[in-house]
Length: 423
Picture 1 (cartoon, rainbow, N blue to C red):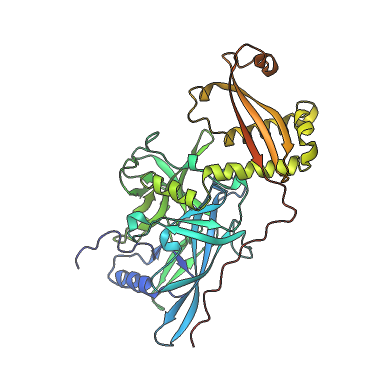
Picture 2 (cartoon, rainbow, N blue to C red; picture 1 turned 180 degrees about the horizontal axis):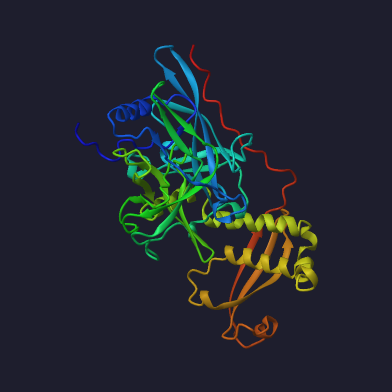
């Protein structure tokens, strides 16, 4: 038998289908009968993630419900599949394109779950809009899903967490983490001639070894097993290749496919490179309204609504933050303001030592207008009030508009029903 290309298995194996996935399964069965696959395949073998682990909190599960037209019965069949993804900038999920659509399929819904175990869990959001890389090639297997609501700040990675090969390169033989909701192992039953997947629906992590430098020049990242023999498996598609060092999380890739030449616990994984596609991810996030700037503005608005919901007294309340136990509130307000101030064209951007709020007053429409100034000083310890009285101090000034607090919780958007199945 001629040797098959390593990517022919592609994404079908890595999506855990609750419905029928006969084409992929038949191909696997055939290769098993030819002696390529062991009787028992220990595919995932990973560890269950600690729910308190902040690094993995942004990893979510995607449950897609879709319809496929059956030419035999002349009816649409409703099916479900499970994938994984990473919350990006609070409002989007970075995942694989094959997790969002398939040949002849029409989606009814994509639900997002953040629980460690999917059994009995309820979705935290649903799909609102989706952008895909578009050409169905494995090396471009990426999609961004805009959710109908934002998730908490500590449950998200941001654009700054996406691998930027201009700043850092992951070297060959380095150990990296893979995360997802895929199966724990799979058993081939020679009597039923069927695969039995075990353990799907629990968030697990594992480690793999970088087979080739991750430098952003190749669209695919090749990973090899470590001594632990961990690997991606059905249900892990779309999940991240991720690391955390010195408190900074970096997302290097998105789960794509595995090498179908050897479907054992010693096979190669291929991840779609985030660095190679970084410009597309950033551009698509902006178009979907989930850029990092959008996320920081949302976080600032939420913080002000929670702590200063009476805009009439906001100016007085903010100026009183320096005393008592509210110093932490002032520090967080400064942080959120700094995240929303664009000083990219200011040569002194890295040297501003303090942020001062000149006033915070409501306008006629009920919005809060915060007037701020950032001060530059060669002596960061210099009191801001003293510094402002110096002749010609260097400063940047601007206005931040915070919308009026919502009177009611924003209604969740619901996905449209596409059509009634043909009879």
